[in-house]
Length: 222
Length: 321
Image 1: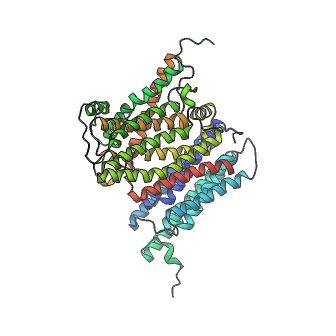
Image 2: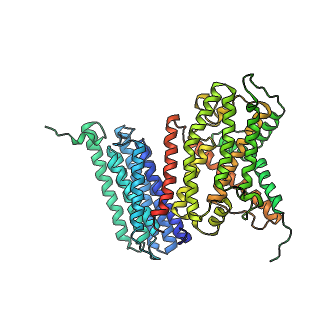
Image 3: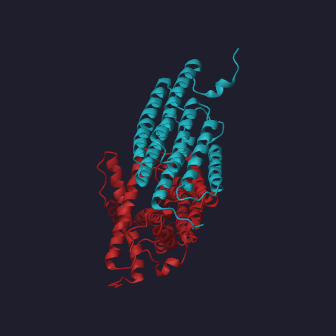
């Protein structure tokens, strides 16, 4: 089991990625919508830190700019917009999930193990590809899916979607740090569009049905 | 290589125990002080735990007429257990000491569990409702913490192919193994275990006076005088022992003496106390940030710790190597 020992920088990336994964698990059990937004802000902070680490160790000046941008957007702007929206709708608790906390955590554990297994069974060994971090990133994406699938309220689903983007950011940061800045920022603007869309959905949905739960939506109206 | 004056291993071993025995109240005092400052209070002096212990040793011991010798023997046995564990774990040195191989990390865990069992037994023996409530709760949650500890040990054992604390620490120190996802997850799980075992928020308010919310604290309610002093001292030692395992085996086994030179041993004592106080500050901050969980939500907390520990083990098997 000892075989391959990661270098200090790859190790640091791993640690930050694991922090992101643990935050994802915390989001899965957070009952308050507000705390979910806060956890998302913390998770995004971790991703920005990862960007700085990658920039410093691989000498990519562009990535510093990306780190700054993602900090401004994901740690400051998105959470504050979401918090404002939440203040308007005056709903505190997330709607009940389709599974209990314990079962959904188990499901999340299962899918994250699958994520690790999937990347591990690819057997790509390259100095340029930090497999472990990639595996953690895939686990983050899968757990975010679980969050989106199991929670039945607009805010949790939006937060799940945004944190899914965080997982993808990690993967893109460690795999393709040298991508041109324009491509990387496109991802971020994608997120911005999603925020606007989800914001509108939240307001319209709440305005119509006075609730944030999506359970109402599967009923036919005549 | 010229090695000058060297402290003989047996003396270092005695020093390990002495460091835990004498340093534990200080670490507790610093944490209590920091906690008070964070809440805007002036707080007790950092040496207050020593004064408390000395004061209690000067008082008389009162025993209910229903309780037997177990009630009085338990604090002494528990204290003895806490004296044994520092022999097994790397408190001051990077190299193994003569008695360090008596037991592995599970052995240390068993000795700690024995101490907890004795205290719970004495509490049940006293016949007082609150003490019995505390002892039954402590045993219940203790049983739920145990699997997490096992999985944490397995996870670390998988990296280092051993479960001797000294060897674990040596592997962690010699490479950047500590930065692997599995190890990070195991360390986080153990951190949560320490949170539970030292009776901190979000599991227990250790400064509270409300008996219904107590777990560990309630067990000592019926003791008085020297017996209570031993129990208080013991729980401070247990706290420092757990901190030492977290720091010196899992997270940061740095600043330990590697050759037994007197100066390096003194440095190691200072380093351990410093690191333990820093860790204590983290716990004090957590204490102020979170609220206590409802009693029936604690199992959920423990399940989360267990889940993380399981993930740590699984990651070793299925993840990229």
